[in-house]
Length: 305
Image (tube, rainbow, N blue to C red):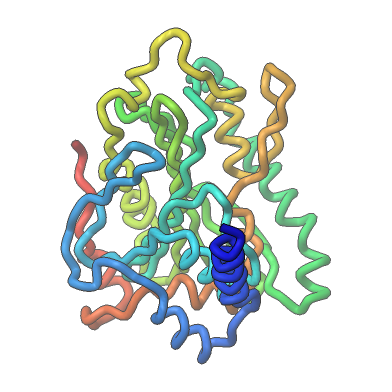
């Protein structure tokens, strides 16, 4: 028995050692990222069942994805020099955009504090977070944030039991990026998607933000796990939707219970140097040629259920 245990330990140890904990340069990155276990290379639109969330997620025909944590973790190290969040369940890549999907099983999120969401105050605090990191980024000779503005403010979709928002980041280098998020509520927790795109002059921001918001239409919780399936006695999350929105932005919010919301899981997107943003926003190689605007406008949308 002890020999079997030793073999298992050595296998696990070697597996851990296989993880490269470093950022790659552009040439290395392009070659190594393609070696990860990307799925949907045959370009078929289909639903993926996310077991942890008890939900189906629609994958479009021109999207590829990683759903193995080891691959997602390696991608994160190669791109940002940081480990992936433990809650991440999928990384989707499309033409010029990435979607990072987490599932957090904190329980049923109540909607009764939605009116506490102050979009103006949230934006102000988000700007302060970016400003507080400027000196560090300058010292490292990295790009830093000049300005952040809402594209659309946090919006509650009562039908889908989800919240969506989007903001644009202006960097000191003159480049721009856009991040949109969806918080999709279930009975036992919620899915959080972060849609990230490198904004270019010929892109339609409204289309981009609407496209990211459409992600909600491609998510369906199984019967018994929908937000509407809540019954008295089910686990209730320590924070309501208002505090959850603030936490997803990286803004500290105190729940009625006194529990502090964790910082946003995708804070590194906001603070990442543009040299690496260019890499992870480039998307998988696509046979569709033409300007970025024409490619984006030809995307198939996730339609309302």
